[in-house]
Image 1 (cartoon, rainbow, N blue to C red):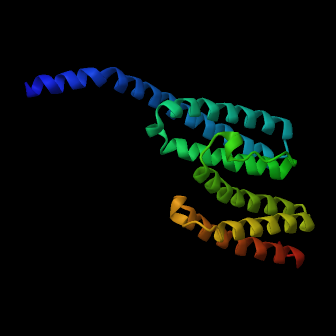
Image 2 (image 1 turned 90 degrees about the vertical axis):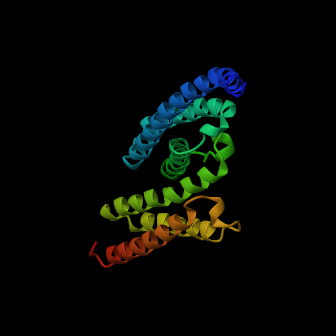
Image 3 (image 1 turned 180 degrees about the vertical axis):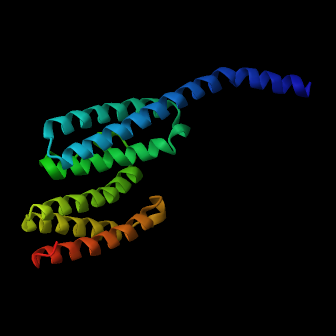
Length: 197
């Protein structure tokens, strides 16, 4: 009787588990694609290739939408690579807005949870440092300083975030990294002003 009951239970959930497995595979593939398109968006933004960057960004948004449709039915699949992919999309959104002055899409517009969006903002500050270094190489110190000021403002916002940092996994560590990036970037700007960069 016991074994028969367990067999009946396992038989009853077999189709659901198979569907979950298939959707898990789809989500992982889409998450990897989303990460790739976001990386390309950021790279193209640094190179000043606006049209290509915007194209990749739109594809990234559509991949995120596909993921969300699956997550709506299987919320337990929102972990690991999916969270990372959502962070990358938030980061790409900040970077593309920074470079091309396009309207910044926030978490609700992108359909991603706030915790991943906040992490993406933190990651974008590292990309801003990269922009500062590129500007300093071109001796565009004024523009570099403007980007640095934005880095500082975002750091302050994240640092003073009123909720416990534990609500956003990894945020405390990211804030510590950002503080070091700010110190290094400030030093680089100082050297550039002395003509030693």
